[in-house]
Image (cartoon, rainbow, N blue to C red; front, side):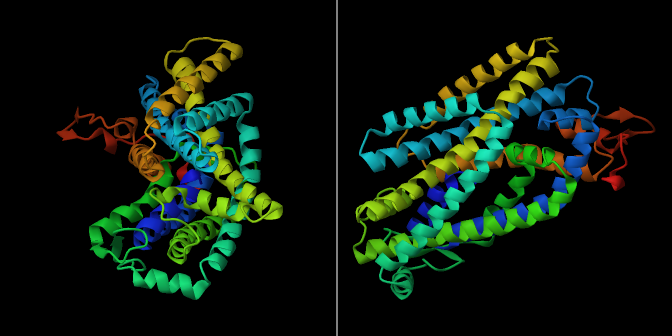
Length: 418
């Protein structure tokens, strides 16, 4: 989970009510569980068998693509869609520090981007995994602290509920609240097609490179079941808390504890500032919350940047162009890739009014549409070929025409053994 969890989701709930974030969370929760249930084990075993440790490398090895075209396309997709994803993290940090210290958004965003890039460059995959674990603890502490404090200063659970009920469509799962965050406003219809579209967020999990890489790196297959349970439970609790914080924050605004926010995605930051204004110990608690937002950003940014840089240095440089470069040269290329992605990410995040939720949804849809179908077919359908993998119709004449995707690809290990 990225800064989207602590800024995008609460901000959406704060402004529009329960419906949109609820269906998004349901889709993501189901997607998380199914991804661990169906993909994790097969991908872990298969990637080990063909000795591949990147997603483009896995696709290339799975389809025995001697031309390495699918390797190149996969690597380019990763780089293209990780740029806006990384930009969302930069935007979140810019909003965090500009709101907290009343500094210019652009200065805050650029400084944050530099810190994230340096931190990622100096570390590696193992460092990212260890820090992710620590950062998830900080994120959990932030959610719990804000949840309890917010309810108290909004006047209690009953006051929060009454305020939410007074806003048209705010607590509905079939309509969204249209109007100001604390205004009665009106209810906007949320149709079946929209609901299905939002639920489809969960399908994106099957194509997220930084998540799939975690499956490939699992030390022991026996740990998969425990990992699935931890991941699924944590995701449900974290997203539920994030949505409720947005609703509670609206209640705090109605109770006068917070000013009406122009940007709902700063709700967590403003609650943290409110906590910190009550003395030294509350200030420490507020610091933990703000650290949680920074942790959520960095925990995803490092994984994304590492995946993108390895795609360029390993998959494109060594894999597609077959350049025999030293490990030192490959490392330099990877670090230069980090810098280039960072610069482009800064440009995308330059608009201070940009939505963290909106940027993430664009990148999420891109990865889901590009990789999810290929990944699922590669693991569950032995007739899938490289032609189907990157969209080419290979028509061959043999007693008539037939699509190349129907031609059997002989796997190196039987799928039933995965």
